[in-house]
Length: 542
Image (tube, rainbow, N blue to C red; front, side, top):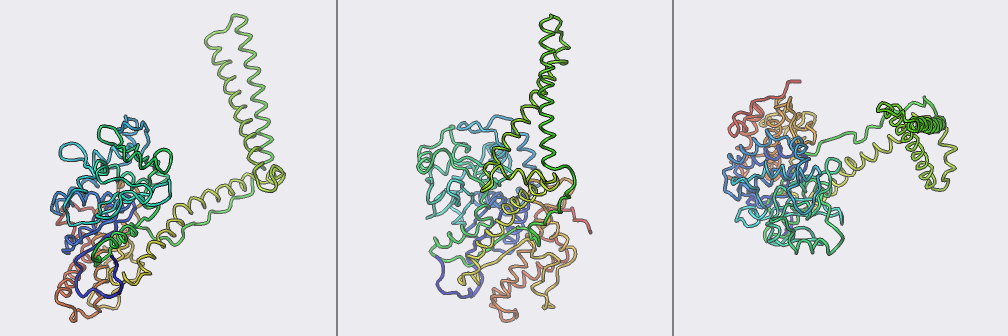
């Protein structure tokens, strides 16, 4: 349900929804820090809806399991922090790649299938030595009422949600599965589907690549998938459709009988002033394409003649009965290599001629113009096409998707006093400090700026760099400090700049926020060390 009339809540929120964006280990650790601060501020018990994507699904799924088991937050934090610190998932996945797949329904040896098994044996290993199933969350009586682990399905190009919801489908409006069948799915497979980003991994085939009890896909699942197409559905990273998970959270809010009081968008998308730095122009030096073609033709003929001569020599030695073991290397190997080279050159030239016939309007006649190009110019043309295509798919397209999903919550006045954007780069030294004109609020320190800079600059990977042991604590500390800062902004915007006029509970909350902020300005690790005393590595001063 969404309110018809926009009005600021009169007091502190009683029901909170949070989105945990994608971004590999950068996302998993930053979101752990955000959850840690929610717990520290007494707000974690008010979480009623969680939407996760990709790297955020690691954190969201582990947190959901801790809620199922009523695990104290400090214990959950220590367990998950330790696992993030010790598991290099890609290294483990590559080691697992050559082993027999755990699934009996399909014999693929893809990296994503291997990683799903690694997830089952590491992050989602159960106490009895097995692995956790989605059913543990679906059947649990927990404070979090709406929970969505987001993936993208490539058959229809829409979201595919593994969710706990009283009213929402598991899957989507075109392909859905029952709660009973979904309960049999391993959490490891769900996380693999949610974090399976293009280019890094192959698509995960649903339901074939999922590990089902007894190795048998449930009949209703198979029927639902086959009803609208042939073969399995390709599932990939949820960030392709919505890397922040905002849409799922808004849908969860609409399904509720009462509105969520607060929407927190925890987002580790990295800032960029230049999504596509234009490559330097290639020089026009070197031979022309026409000259290369002539050289290739000459080499092809030379290889063909060599193959014939060497073959004749081998045949003569065989007929004379003088062929020895060493003649195999003198005649047969050179004949095979020369023949193969000649064939590859012939096939390449034939394929190029064939493809040139498809050039609109001019067809093969374009050769007369293309043959005059220098090789450097041709390489530059190809390079520009490839790099611009990659930038479109990985940066420009994702930026546009991000703007669209943010627009849903920022253009709607109903959410004006309920939204909190918790962006990883909010506290970068180059960003404007919201409380710049407030002498009672301390400015971010250089130490905090270094911590946030390390967090922002970490690439999207599934490991932490061994020579940078400070990456994990910096990301967690950045998550804590950034959420504290953004909650302060929310209070100031809702209730004004004069704390003396705040309601009593809001004033107490504000004072706690300011106290925590001052502590983290003085020592960015101030709130980590009570949870993980070994969080010693500090980022370098430069």
